[in-house]
Image (cartoon, helix red, strand yellow):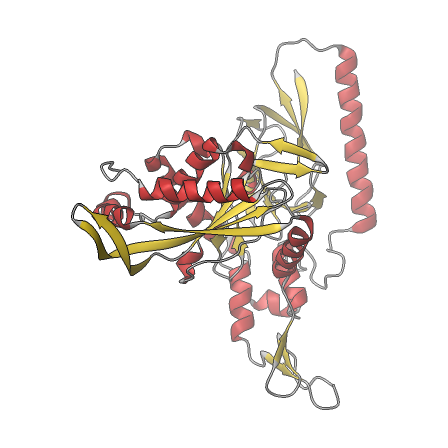
Length: 431
């Protein structure tokens, strides 16, 4: 028998801690590898955490409501393995477990379960649990515990979700705070008006994190953006041929995003030095091709789920993977490992009607590609009888890259290669 620590996983590049929502297993329960053991909440997602090993849940080191740093042990799993260890090893493991338990008990006794700086506790007197995200929004928008107690939640076990709270804030009376000329607040609410014309709205926590990371990326990387226009007429016609039959058969849409990802993956295999990261003066060339795709959330923020080993998928598999990740991202049901490990990122700004953009690199990656809106326009085409004007479906690709390590030649050739793959898309393939 071996004893294995289960630690709080990292659920996103900027996430440093998580809150235990619910233990799905009890001490003594058998556990299969990858079986969900507990539910964890962060500022971005609520998700179930799977077991890293099969065995029996021997010890629980954190109770529901505890806020645990990433990497800290939360449970001990007793696994059944060949008895290659010594009795000394097992004793050391038991001592380590006991020390972890004592540390958690001391932390609980001194700190409690209220998030620092928040007026809303994790557990209310009535027994309701409020996730870190809900508590942060409540603090930023001046929503009291009394108000939260009166709300009906749509989450698991009637838990209040981010969407529930935002709907309440947007619809509650007195939602606008006006500041009189004396500077004193006239009424309470989520926004303030200085002169009766302009509103002052405090950023929510997620927006603050996004702002900080964008500024940090601009400070770290020397951003340069190259643009290429691609003729996607053949690809558009192919999609029009299959989109209705695919929707009827699979119950899901056929978007351009999987095709874009396929083209990016092929170009990365052609130019592997775009699939790198930087650590000080060292360049780390990534063996895996993990594509992050920016997804817009209902509240207006963005999240970037990752398709790991994207070079191992055929187009049909990418279509299903993209649809699945996008849906679960909007439903707040992504798993922790689906938000980390990206080596290259894409963003479909065309979905907002934008023809091009200058995307900001996701650190520590060195490049990001934005796909613009596909627009019909007149273009010169070469025919057997000479040049002619024809209506073509065109799209701009905007490639931002870190000029510290990616020269203009590589950055430009890469985006041109992506465009070439899209223009030469095999329209004979089906789904």
